[in-house]
Length: 349
Image (cartoon, rainbow, N blue to C red; front, top):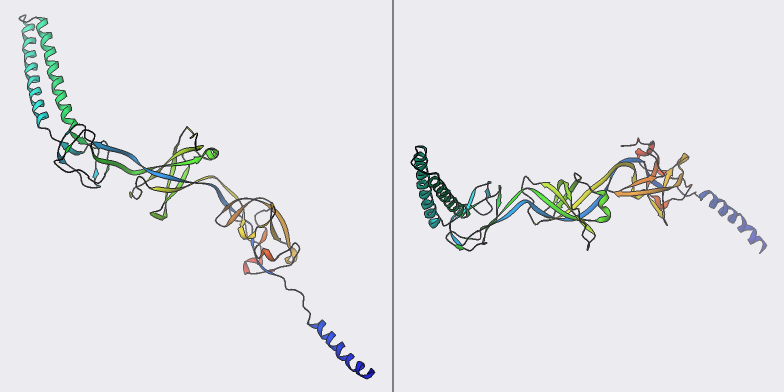
């Protein structure tokens, strides 16, 4: 039994020695690092707005009459002052002709009386009476012309007409809609903003709007005015922006999502993946001498397009870990991936 124990002792010693030679220290974790840069940040206000025509009016019949002319097509353009529709004018034309004849007769009689008065054959009272009669005749003629004008429907401004829902020869009553004319060369966009954000808004401020019909095409404009009254129920204020619309893509009544940018600034920024959150504090890992990392507290601001604004704790040019932070602890040595980590990059403005 004693010989057996001695025989196995060298084998155990050899196994122990072999185990020491095979032991390895843990590899340094592989991470990516970048230099801290500066970037432009803006505060964003998001809202939903409704598109309105620059100018819009419903053209309606002023009197009950039959339509004798329709001078527009569905969705057609009309210029300012162009005749859109004409109502029957037979009786009005006759009234105007009669009134015009009476006016001419009164004017001729007045001229004769003035000549007689100059030669002493007519009294001033007779002339004054004829002046009154001539004035009444002119007023009657003007009334007849106004009655005709009421029956000629003209466009008050240039714009595009709605689809036609009325036919030639139809008898319309006073107030019947004939067409809607809209100037959509530019669009008024009304949207509501909470009163708490009023300090961030001002006329002339740039906005961008997106319509569901054109998801990849932002429409840009500026704030024109802000309603001076805050809605007491919603505690919001209505803001009106103006959007150029030369291609007439935007239509009145459209719903648009609105983004207002304010407080533009250049600030220190880092990728979102570089931030480590712990309770109410945020940290990044700085790359130090010998490839060791140091956990540094930072104060963060806005988030924008995958980057975070750093208000305090970093300066442009410092190198931080941007990928692999979950594997790190303060003072740990790391291995850097990528040729861009050979030296710090210059800060970008």
